[in-house]
Length: 107
Image (cartoon, rainbow, N blue to C red):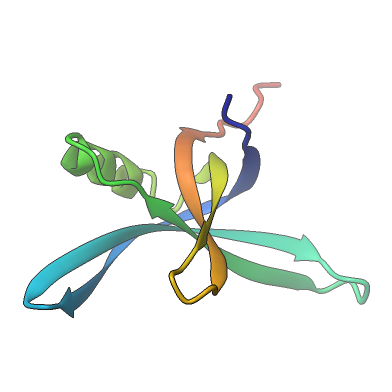
């Protein structure tokens, strides 16, 4: 069973990070979401969170959809996937598992 979390904020769009190893190009796609909260001084702090987008056969459609949400309030569900490298170092990646646009309630 997959467990995940929800992050709410303004969609910033997608970007690609390309790396070359042994003559092969590897592309990793990311989705940026910005959130804003008031700190203890009453001033808004803004934070940008990046989520990895998993490679799939539908990657182009996903990127088009994510970019169509740019500037809109969204809820991103995500999964934290830990990993361990051969040399013992550990880390984790935060992958998008779903995204929906948050529409304001009608009064």
